[in-house]
Amino acid sequence: MKLVLVSACALLDADNRVLIAQRPEGKAMAGLWEFPGGKVESGERPEDSLIRELHEELGISVKIECLAPLTFASHAYEDFHLLMPLFICRRWSGTVTGREGQAIKWVKAVRLRDYPMPAADIPLIPHLIDIA
Ligand SMILES: Nc1nc2c([nH]c(=O)n2[C@H]2C[C@H](O)[C@@H](COP(=O)(O)OP(=O)(O)OP(=O)(O)O)O2)c(=O)[nH]1
Image (cartoon, rainbow, N blue to C red; front, side, top):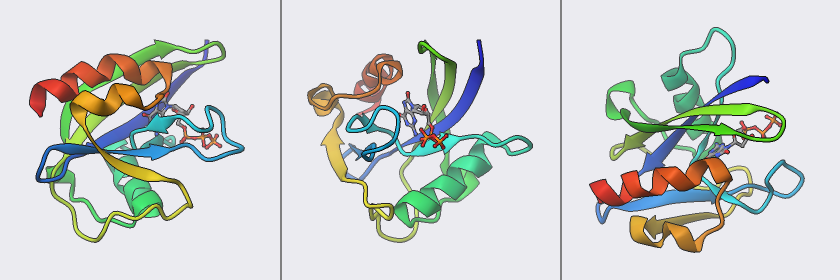
C-alpha cells in the first residue's frame, strides 16, 4: 500500500488550548477537524514542510526550534497508509487566521473528542491531554 507522509502541528495557546481546522468541502474527509499541516513533498524535511503549510494555511511564521515532536500517527486508511508526525508549537509570530476559508477553533484538549476528527487522529488525543 502507498505510504503517505504528512506533517501536522498542535498549536497551543497560553491556556493550553489546541488549534484545530475543519477540512473544507470538496476535499477527502471534508468537514472533519484536523491538526494543521499537510503532505511532505519529496526532498522536503517534515519540519520545513510544516512551516510552509502553517504559513500558507494560517498566516503564521514558526521557527524550526519552536517545533517539538510529540508523537505520531500510523494509520491504515482504505487506500493509503498514513504516517503523520505530530509536533507541538507554543510560539509563533502573526495572528492565526483561516487563510484558505477553513473554520478554525481553539479547543481544550479534553474537549477534542467533541469534534469529529480523521480516524488517524483519535489515538493522538490522549497525548495532548497529558501535556495540557
Ligand atoms: N493536515 C492533516 N492531515 C490529516 C490529519 N489526519 C489525517 O488523517 N490527515 C490526512 C488527510 C489527508 O489524507 C492527508 C493530508 O493531506 P493534505 O491535507 O495535505 O492534502 P489533501 O487531502 O488536500 O490532498 P491533496 O489535494 O493535496 O492531494 O492526511 C490531520 O490531523 N492533519
